[in-house]
Length: 256
Length: 217
Ligand SMILES: Nc1ncnc2c1ncn2[C@@H]1O[C@H](COP(=O)(O)OP(=O)(O)OP(=O)(O)O)[C@@H](O)[C@H]1O
Ligand SMILES: [Mg+2]
Image (cartoon, rainbow over all chains, first blue to last red; front, side, top):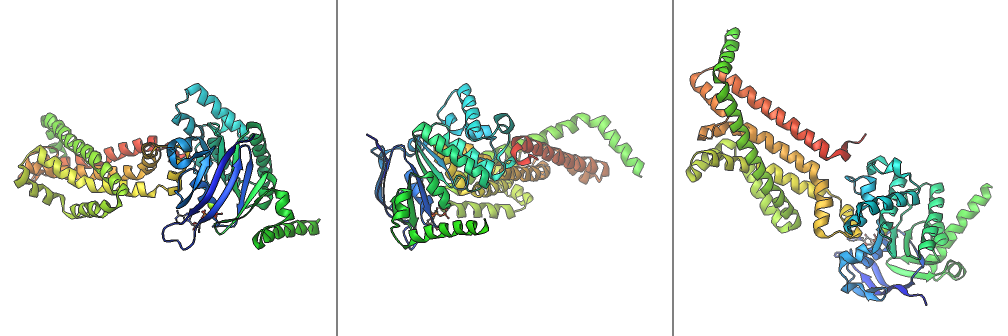
């Protein structure tokens, strides 16, 4: 039987001075090994939801359980060390080399030097960047897309069971993007991890997710498999999303 | 006349090399001690300001007031309280050097972007680790600028310390003023100038080696 990896129950977050709930009564149950994508317009609460899961924000209401354990009772530092998190702004440390950046979490867990060294090489290879070429560079010497790949490698470093990724491929060019999407699928399938990936790109959401969360104005509009969503859009917003993607397809067919 | 000054200066170095070197040593000593104390107090104060926003206004405005008081006034004001000597001089210099160190620490820490701090917490750093591994290193360039400003101010103002019997290169200058001897004024003044340049070059060198990432390409 598959275990429930993430259970989000009635979670609401309202920022001080805000008029609306950034996250509004969200309920999601995610099994271990699922690849969930979160799709939604700007400001719909995707980032906020991820930050609540790793306790960077505290919800005003509701509970979150990871593998059955209420995170309210887990030490935040321990919790975050067991979750991989790629932030939307990439957030590489500019004063550390690429190798040091990737090694951050293993160092916090006091791995030995040799293990860290090998892990860094493996991870750089995994995200398609030649270790000997990139290890000693600083983040400012990398392109935006390369930085994002390092961000991904850094989050994967200690092999976390749950990965939260906030638009991890936003700055990657279309071709590398397709390649990295396949990489992500491979990493996910090979390691039996639970992935939560936020994206603006509807194609990416439908390609990667075995189930998709569609958010609008803090609420979850629909949470289902790609097929069911296309067959039965839950509301106007979901239909318009699918419609916009279809129109794009037609545009390309028109050109061909 | 000009020849005369050169001869006089040469003469001074021939006869007084020892006391000249001692003056430099004294000058550097009180300057470095004052700078160290200013750093040891200023940086934690800056951190406290950033961490407890309520205290910031009070501490910062206190030091802004201190900054406006001229160094000579601080020195003279301290005499009745502390008496004359090295201790008073150092205290005065510390008071002078604190504002740039403290203010730059505050600005430096504040300029670290929120997402960078969040990224550090997200990886699983404790508050202490975030401070030492991310916030301070990223604030360092600005803190260093503050230290450099403080150092330059201290070395210049330490000249006045001779007035309250703390020795240093000021002694040579004040003697020159008293005896109306241009050679001594020149020697004292130029040496203070050179010391300032040398120490700021040294600090810049340290800055560049420590903050290598800022200067790649
Ligand atoms: N730290 C904060 N303080 C106050 N309001 C915030 C904060 N973070 C986010 N918000 C607000 O909460 C709402 C949801 O923001 P969130 O960042 O979760 O959106 P998002 O779905 O990630 O958007 P995007 O796709 O643009 O990244 C927005 O209205 C935003 O302005
Ligand atoms: Mg976001």
